[in-house]
Image (cartoon, rainbow, N blue to C red; front, top):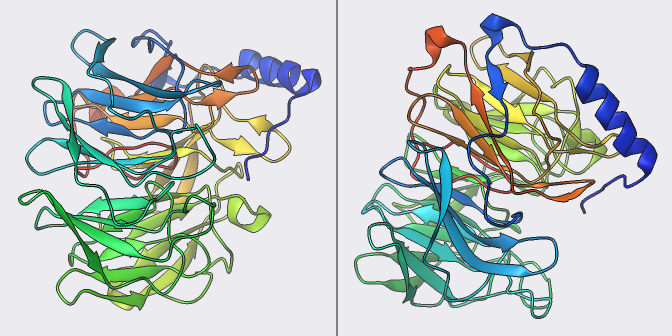
Length: 389
């Protein structure tokens, strides 16, 4: 469950802290003012997808009062968002992935008319900027997890049904035939956009709840990934799952006290979890991704007593340590964060104590490393994000 402080004291406290904090060092990167475009409408509860040509797609979401069908595209060359074709069905808490042919598949979520879930799916073609219907899933899923497999098929697992009960099943979408097929059900409840990553072996790690699992596309079977509760011995929800350049997987934060204040890595070679240094600030509903520096940038989120956060930290996979990063100009929970090809990071949308946000910010790494190429991934970042292209 999301937790916010809405008192005037909290808002004033946040204003004092972020107005009076020290300016970032010249060699530590910076956060540009929210000039990189403003969304036409505030957005949260949606995935952001990096398109093949380097643009960013924002599809649907929630503006604070209604579920959205409108969509926008960010062009890094102009620094502006512009409208594109609208979804056929307004939705929030959905998931989206970029297919190998460049199209974007959106599945599930909720349309906000009633508390429930959607089985429908849609395909976005970037060139005409239009959506077409795709075959619906066998089961309605709100907030499912999805990844693109090495062979181009899309694996969707978990989520909640129309009665908000966990769905313990999985399905495969084949872009070539446009059809869905059932696969073996996971052993545990799965869900949460951005909580699954494809490992170098081709297996898929799903890290949410109390027990993480691996799905093997070759055998079609699931297996446990490490011990119950991982290295921190806790249930995770509202966390981030990030594939590291060395093949390990970093998991940070979550909604429980133990999860919020811990971080751990999954080591595929040993099928085991290892504790790493904890971030300085406990957080949930934040964003995380691998930057051009080869570090993991963790930004914003929420804290059970501090409210929405503007703080940011960098995790060094080689050293296993955290360092402070420049703070955001606005506190943001549930924001999107994506790597842009020029080596910067776009942070967009989200929510704080003042409401749902339409502004964007851009994190600029130190000049010496700004043109490096981070780990690439064909899926986008949203509510709890993984790494992206």
